[in-house]
Length: 83
Image (cartoon, rainbow, N blue to C red):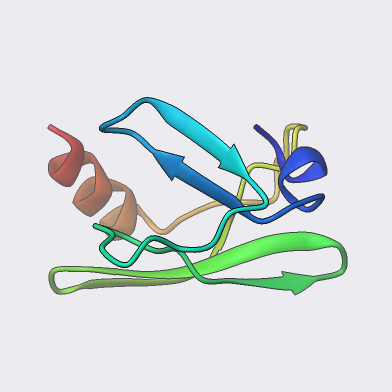
């Protein structure tokens, strides 16, 4: 889902139960919550994973962007985390 859909309601995505619930409240217990900022109608998040800290990660907007480029050290750190 892109932000064109996400910004129309409050959403809870439960991967364990394989459910996406609109107009929901945040469950009492959750594994991860992503807080975001809106700048010029685009959605950005700051992430801290272990000792890696990255600012202004662009959240999916439904179209390609060529101006989002991470430094090589961040790309390698993220790649290592996903393996």
